[in-house]
Each structure stands twice: as C-alpha cells, then as structure tokens.
Amino acid sequence: MLSLDVLGPGGPYRSRRVETVQEFTGKPVATLSLAPPLYVARAMKALRRAPVLPLDERIAALTEAGRAFATETVAGLTVSEYQRTVSATTGIPITVVRESTGDIARAAQRIHHSLENARPSAAVRSWRDPLTRAGRAVWTRRGEVFAVHAAGNHPAVHQGWLDAVALGYRVAVRPSRREPFTPYRLITALREAGLGDDRIALLPTDHRAADDILRHADLGMVYGGAEVVRKYAGDPRILPQGPGRSKILITAETAWEPILDTLVESISGGAGVGCVNATAVLVEGDPTPVAAALAERLAALPSLPATDERAVLPVAPMGLARRWNEHLRQRAAGTKAWLGGDGIIDDLGDGTAVLRPAVHQLDSPFADQLGAELGFPCVWLAPWDRDAGIRPLRDTLVLTAVTTDVDLIDELVAEPTIANIYIGDHPTPWMAPGLPHDGHLAEFLMRTKTFLR
Image (tube, rainbow, N blue to C red; front, side):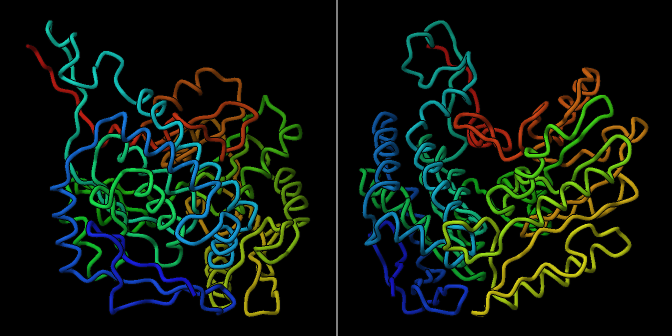
C-alpha cells in the first residue's frame, strides 16, 4: 500500500481523513490523504506569500523534473511501477500510460519553447528589457496563484498546467481521486528539482473543500463534463476544460478509403478516452460505406486487461461498464448500430470488463448524438451537405477536414468554436509541444501592459 500525502507548503501532510484508491479489480493500492478546508485555506495563503523564482530557475526545475518523471524513482516508485499502477487503477492500456509519460516529460523539458510560442512577438518578458526605454509592451501575469481541478481520465492532462509554473504562478493542484499518482509524481519531481514546497502544492480534497481551492486562487482551470462547463461559464476567473467533441469531415471530392487508418486512429488511438479522439464523422454523401469499414476495423481490436502489453481498449469495473452500456443504449435509440448495438461489455472474469468500440449511423448532421462523448471509442456517423454548412461542426476541440475546398477551410478557420483544424490525412489526436491545445494557456494567464521608462 502506498501512502499519498497532501503535499503542502510545509511539506508532506498525512491527514486523519484518508481515502483508499483501488485497482479496478478491487485490490487496494494506496491511501490518499484528504486536506480539510482549514488546511486548504492556510496552504493557499502560503502559496501567495512565496517569492517568485527567476525565470531561468523555473525553466531549469521543469527541465530536470521532466527528466526525473520519465526516468527515475520518484516518491518511492520506479517508472514502470508508476505506469503499471496508473494502468491498473484507470483501465488505460499500459502502452498509452507509457506514451503519456514521455509526453509529459517532453512538455516539461520544452517549456521555454512553449512560452515563446505563446508570447506576443512584440512584447518583452520584463520591464528591465532595454527596449522599454522607448515604450514597449510587457508580458505580465494576471495573478499570482493558479488552481487546477484535474481530471483522471488520462495522465496527459497534467501537461496542461506546466505553463503556469513556468510563468511564475504558484500552483495548487486538486488531483482526481481516481488517479492521483501522476500529479503526485510530477509535483514531487518539481519540488525535488528546486521549485520548492511553497510554490506548488497537491491538495486532494472532498467536494466540500474543492471550491475553496478555487476561491483562494486568482485564476483556475477546471476539468469536467458539460455540467462543469455550465457551472463556470460565467466566471471570468475560471477556465473550464470540458468535452472535446472532436470531429472529422470528409467532403465529396476526396476519397475516404486511403485514410481509413487515420479514421481508426482518430477514434480509438490512446484507447479512445481522450478529448481529442473523434466522436463524430460527417460525410458529404452516403456515410454507409465509411460506417461499415470502421465497424469492421474496430471490431477486430482485442479485448485484454489494461496491463497487457497488447491492450488497446479501456477497462472498467463491471458496475461502471454496465452504466456506460445502458447510457449508450439510451443515447443510440433510433440510430443504426453497426457495432455495439448488442452491447459494449466484454467480461474479463475478474470483476472488470473491456469497453468495446461502438459505431452508429445517424440520419441528420443535426442529430443530438453528434455531441455525445463517451469514455470509450464511440463514433457517430452522419451525412453532411453544403446546405448544412459549418453549424454541425461547431463546438469542436479538433476538426480533421478532409477537403480541398479553400472557401470551406476559410469558414472553418474563422469559426470561433473550433479550436484546432487539421486539413487532410491527419488524426485528431495529433499534438506537438509548443502548439496550443485549446488555445495557449498563457492567453488566459497573461496580459500585456505598455511600459515606458
């Protein structure tokens, strides 16, 4: 049994109130300390009092922490032990956890590149820059303390707040109680690399104390579903990170057969649990042949325990698997099921089940199901035509548009609710360090001021 303490400004803190983290088979793995409200309030005040490290020291700490995170024993776990633990408690295939480990390390080690990409080209980093003698824009923080309510569906979400550390914010992370291992490891590595205990904190809490973390921060980022987005949509201090609803559009002048591998990767890559996985494919014309081909390919994916080296699909406790199955059955009512119509549960015999892919065909590009993002590979296919326009493509994190229509591309780029656009044969999960995910986080954390001396 691992003991995951609160990581507060005064060092590790073991609360009297703890929660047991279990593998999906029911085996206990760790005890997670929960920070009480009074401790949270004091920790947030201590973060605010902590002095800001110089930029070069912050970058050095992130670089070293990224290396240690991916290669060394941290918080008592080797890299392989950490990866197996995450896989066994989340149901994410071990190969996906390994890939995420490398992604987090690269993001930390290339953080300076990310900041430079986000900084306005005419703005300087400090008022001490000689250019401010003639008047210059200075890039500066909008606050001092940043809070994160992290998700537990994928380890790679913890790349998201590293920019805040690099920009000089003191950061408090409330981890998912489903998967606290990644932030615990990353924050421990950052502290040991020189960031210090009083500049970054891990504050596991129950729901009662969760909002206290946001209330004591200047700015915050919250992961969750549509209800979380609605809750914080009117709060300018909070950046909600909701469902991705990523999509693929195939127009009539292009062929879908040569990109079938890309379609499969977009839907099922990384076990199909990410916000960048495609949940809708819109086809100009008849989507039937595309649906049939996808169903055939996705049906061939193996059902294996998450810790198996060949696993590619997510695993869930049987109770959760049944809830997903029932939810899909209700959402898919009235659609044509190519795959998953008779259920998505594949019992592994140990109290867990593989969540199999689902493929459903719709009659309209305006069907409600196109916005349904589930916790396993699930895709909805619909016909699309020029009269429908870009309305069915809105509210999309990543859109892969397989088209040669430059006027359509102009419309897609101009649409403010589409965050990222890939033209041609590119899978929706494609990402690279330094490029924005849902905009640069720095766009939310920073502002420019004119400075003249």
